[in-house]
Image (spheres, rainbow, N blue to C red):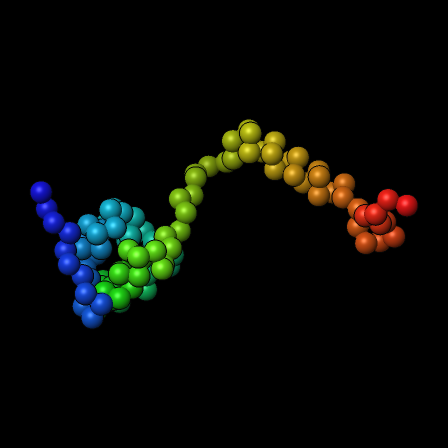
Length: 104
């Protein structure tokens, strides 16, 4: 059984340590960094990526949020229908151009 590394606010954390602590694969963190979508600001030091310990602790405490998982491909048929109905409802609502929301 491996123990989680103890992280302090004043240390720099490696990508391997971050992956182990957050249970998010190293490849996912690498992809987020490459895309500029990492929830933590990476520090790039001579070819190595590090993270501030304080930021990692904030992520663990829930002060920093991980982006939601995004589905791939086109929306499902149910999602398409729901979006279409929502758009139809939005198009059929009265506007401020002479129509009132109150009954006469």
